[in-house]
Image 1 (tube, helix red, strand yellow):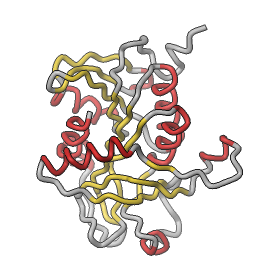
Image 2 (image 1 turned 180 degrees about the horizontal axis):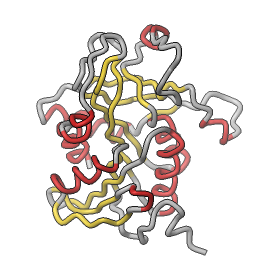
Image 3 (image 1 turned 90 degrees about the vertical axis):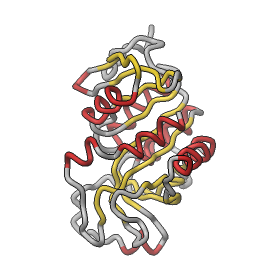
Image 4 (image 1 turned 30 degrees about the horizontal axis):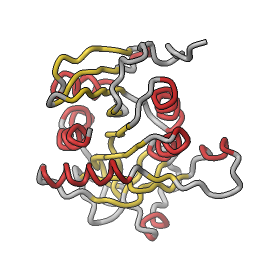
Length: 235
């Protein structure tokens, strides 16, 4: 019995390219498809989670939203990696800056994640599971960024299960050199590792957890184009 379509993705086998860009927001997925892809085709719209496949500079590329949080991206990445033969997923999202050198609208690439999530417990391995990106994708993404005149911050990020953190005690993460906080990458990296595939998280800093500076919701949706270009060039 075929695993596709799934309860969450209505696409047929072959509808997705081998590389999928994955923003959290479905409207950002639509924006990328309409502004960067040639001949984009809507291949999924279950629950309004829009997925498109088109071409970028002659290369077939897909973009589909993940929703917010590790449970959501865990579902979509698992199905794409294991059922749709997707090889690479590049998360393109927003993050909160933690270190003083990480400014609002800067680009952060997550080489590894620390997390307060229980995601790794499902693997029943009596050890800490490192959530790390694909070095191949990271290397390509760094080159793409530099070619576009962007110097990214590369290092450890914090994938949190909690957005409205009651403590907001980020000093412990800053002390360990954690550059930014977001809510999806750790699950994505572990799903990729389990499937033998590749994943990378590229984020634009939308707000800063220390200074309080932030971008508007409209800016988050449409103006983070450098991050999108870097991901597309990497793909």
